[in-house]
Amino acid sequence: MPLPRFWLGCIGCVLLVSLLWGCALPQVRAEDRLFLNVTVEYRGELSLPAGTLVDGTVVGGISGLTYDPQQQQFYAISDDRQQPRFYGLALSLPSAVSTYEGAIEPKFVTFLTQANGDLYPANTADTEGIGLTPDGRLMISSEGVTATSSLPWIKEFVLNGQQERALPIPAYYLPEETGQKGIRNNLGFEALTLSPTGDRLFVGVESALSQDLRPNQPIYCRLLHYLRGDVLPVLLAEHVYPLDPAPAGSIANGLVELLALDNGGHFLSLERTYSPQNGYGIKLFEMSLAGATDTLGMAILPVDLPSLQPVRKRLILDLTTLGIPLTNLEGMALGYPFADGSRSLWIIGDNDFDAQIPTQALVFRVQF
Image 1 (cartoon, helix red, strand yellow):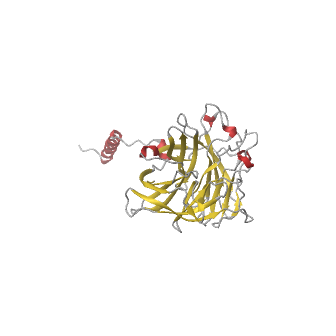
Image 2: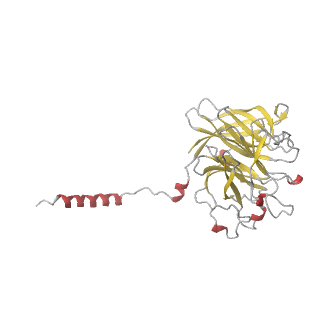
Image 3: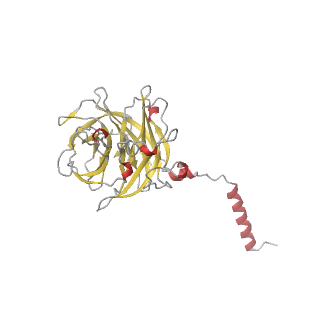
């Protein structure tokens, strides 16, 4: 006697479930859901000889980079404390997607001026980060200069170099003469990036604030998150960034750049170490703000740091594996598309105005 249609359907469902249960379904780790799975591919190196002049000014000390798609050029900030300024640069891409050697072409130089139009006095600013807004403004950060008691700042400038406004900074970032609080000398606002829509600004310190240093503990850099609009930008949040331990013998270790990839809290971060024996170490990470604790208002990070969730990161590329000599790479920006439509990623170096060291730029093909 044939089975009723209802029971045939039930048997079919049971068989289907059994079949699916027996299949090896792909397992997705929680970590993988945090990231965009960024991939980078090295494409080549560009170089600008030390001592190159533009409008009578030596080009060097490049610490930050941003791209202007309207003008199809880059703006690069110099950390010269004597004459704070930025350059317009042309960084050319090859006609085909292949490894190549190119050149860095300076187009012009623009000196930064205060709100009253005066130039910044020498040794009052140490400019490190730069980002271009969609409406053609430049966001620039300064580490400050301890020797002249000049405080760190984050400011907005028009393209002629004149300051328009300064952003609020928590008081616990401002250094004290005792050295017990605030940004440490030459370890201030080094990393700066804008979201693709330009309404969010992120600025990171190179290393821990004085009050956050603890013996034999990891170093946590603080990241500030601003909302930009028609009124003065508003400080929304703060997060902590775990710095990778430096190799033995290193005398420098820090977060030197951030690059926002989207409006969803995904970034690239660049860390730099230096030791007299091994030279520069440069690592590129993918970073996510998902689930990170908001530490805004915490003047001192708690001793029980495991109670905080720092931003999450994972290594994308250790640049020492490229097999080329590395200089003090500090700036990073997305740029022109390649011929196949993929994006270019540029990382540029600060030659410290050393007459023996050229300005180095590396270009990568990036997908995310």
